[in-house]
Length: 342
Ligand code: MRU
Image (cartoon, rainbow, N blue to C red; front, side, top):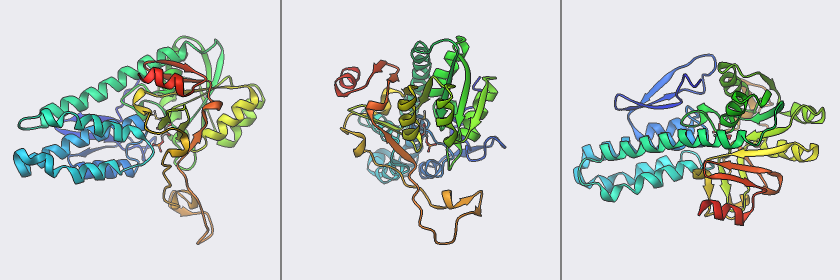
């Protein structure tokens, strides 16, 4: 499995698998400029909260390389505007800001050329994420009963992370242990991460998967076909509210009604203890052409008013379990999140 890498460092450059082109084409793009990395994040070449954080960490290496080449030991004074630009690439995934903060912590100890130290730090962020995914896969799978059928939304797989995946990591581990019979992949309008990416990833691993449109998920739940909704997250607040791809909330409401369990799988780097509740999370609103057009063809009337939020908030009370690499939180609340975080 994972015979592709969404993010890799190769020959002194950041290489990203262009996820806008999948599954038709696997094209890798090379980056040696931090601002272009930021644009690649904004434009969805790389997407998924942990993968965005890892790409940003390598972006910091590229920014420091340029600042050092241009300004020598004064590089720290000349990297700030690039880091600001990078931090603004997408607003909801906290992993972006987390990775920049972690990289910054190395700045004060660097004496000369920053590249070697920062590259080692970025590689550590990358490897730690892969390790966390395997641990979350193990922990999450331990909660799944044999013969389960599950639904996932968006793509929280190897493509969205350093490798293996969060929600798809649990699904991969549970399938390997003979616990999951079938996966339903919810299409995920408008970027179709479920249709293009999750279906593709699971097919590569020969895990039985059916693609369904979002609005079919409740019907499958009603028919008793689904035991778990398993998703990733872009940001979890101190009280256990979860931001994830738009559509997650309605799946969770439906899951509650039908007695389907809800599992959110995310590394600790996705938890934002500075925000109390999901209402505080900045929600990205994207270009309206994403919903008025399909593959460049206008399908809505000219000048139609439209709204295109890319994420929604699922309140903690709808979540049965949050799985992190540091442990499982059942019925999340502020005390449980605090003690896990500590
Ligand atoms: O807009 P995207 O594709 O970046 O949104 C991704 C998601 O919502 C994922 O579910 C989330 O980042 C978790 S990825 C492990």
